[in-house]
Length: 591
Image (tube, rainbow, N blue to C red; front, side, top):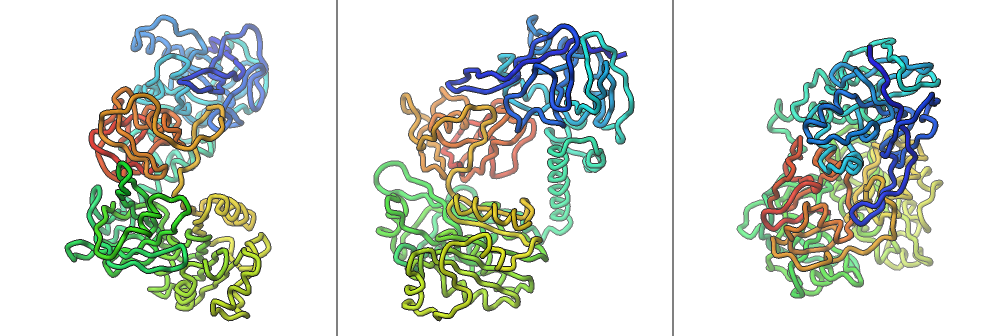
């Protein structure tokens, strides 16, 4: 008979950690007497990060005394007191290999249901003083698990734990954890996991994505000549030749590139981008990324660069680049790509954000795609409307194309007429896009929308599309600035512009963070590329910091890395896990 050995609670508190402050409820301590267990929590308990812990599906965390004894031996420690793993219930029995998702248990007056394994999180390592603990819990198949409260009631140490009902698929906690975090997944077990109603929604979504990826991979193996997801191109940087430069607006010019030896360049997917390594003469070469702005079927590439008022690289390209010049370019990459499908498509952009969606429009027009297609663009005025005539002609080639243009500058209607557009053009609108004007375009709720432009524009349009009825997974965005940080539990501070790291200059290979515009030598005093990025105040994304969760996965533009610790599952080719990697050569990261 399993037994509840200890009830542990603790309220969130601020804890100093690596020069930052973490808000966490991982510090739990045993309590005497009965405690009321409610739908969301135990009286006297709380979680500091409700995005990753707590809530109805993760109300109570369970860990076993058998695992305590295991870790005492593995870690050589005798100070592991109940609650130190952040658990609410320390139990005798209920091992992760035996307990299944969907099992129901009665403890004292309350009844519970098993919903998922423990979330991999760096904070358990904080609590134990063992930074690799998140990885160890998964690798040694001892994660612990969460309970949902079905019936509220009092519990106390010493209560017997009674199995009320077994889960429908009898998939154990350890098996479920391995299915998400370890390689060599069994497709049959993925399907089994998705048939368990009690499994928490977050894990269900993760398993759906894994199952979809497996099906896609199998399709590629069955049809090797049709691999739309395969990245074209070459490793690292390759020298390309500037074929011609075409002014598009007063501030935007298109740069056409071909191979230096005359061979056709590999075809890119519409929406992908190129990374250019540019020597501006004032320090180490700088890397910038620019979307391909046209179809690449002709074996050449076109990027379109806006000259920013204080842009060192864009200014150099506009002022100093000439036809015949050679440029170091990384192969096309990026996941903001036009998916194959049969449903409606909305291509929505602002300013120079038109470039990746214009490449998509080129592809759709080239095959006269029969789907309903919407081209929606916002510009300051006609003079600054990049690709106005080109996009208009492409939309006209579509059997069911719709065009809507918004000019935001006062008096831009006059500018439109002076520039030669028809003054009565029904597709041109004065003023910014609104919820009403977006609804009037007729974009259906089952459309796939592709958005590119300033972050505020994408946030605003994305929100309006969701309010219009589009599901979030149908709204795709592209941004070349640093992605929003994901630093669970870290107390927010005022944003700081990325900069060179403090301390002595490193002597190792150069590390370039392409999105943030920082190039700096590596120093072996740092433990990982993630730590270097943090020292530069570059927005980062992570959770476990031990190579388990893959939250920190980052596209690798060029170079090689080594891992310490080795990740439990290697990342996809062309990417790295920043949290546990170090450069062995000069590297360029899309971060």
